[in-house]
Image (cartoon, rainbow, N blue to C red; front, side, top):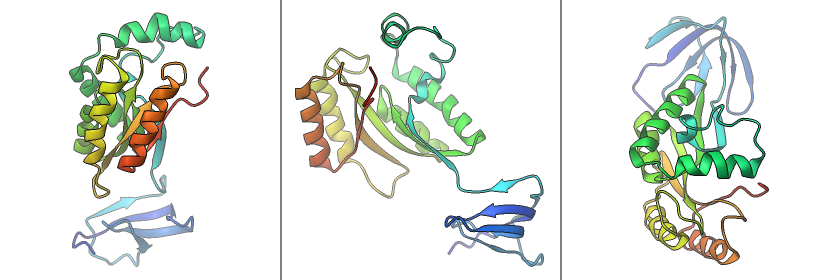
Length: 215
């Protein structure tokens, strides 16, 4: 148990991890527990919760965090493949690690503001995104992209998988961030590449992330 005093929310509504609803004064403890408040406890902060709903944070299981900078309202209305080939891919060809760092920081700030504590990301330079989320205190499953076509981060699938082999070897369940293999899609990855990615995931006990039905 933590020595940090709890935070009291008065006149609030809380849903705990099991979905149990509590109405009234509650204490939120540093280890994630909640309990009723008698009003006389030593607390870190006393907050009016009458206009608040306390519940578990959101999770986003498919993101491209750094695209916060280059995809919103960008060539809206294009069919998928025209959007990719004429708008997104030419822009992404110039992306750098520093660009990913800036975009991921913007996305991390938005996650915090909107109550999202986890992202399953798929984008270039995954180690950079991992550093950003860790620094922000957020959790992530960070997928390094794999494609038979050249990417800003790798010339081919083989080099991408080689780097990911090293990243997956560093996975530790105690860390905020874990790394995964993000094979982009069936139209950018051959059957051989998908098979190699699957074998690497099995070898490292890692996860696979893919646009499974994007056509």
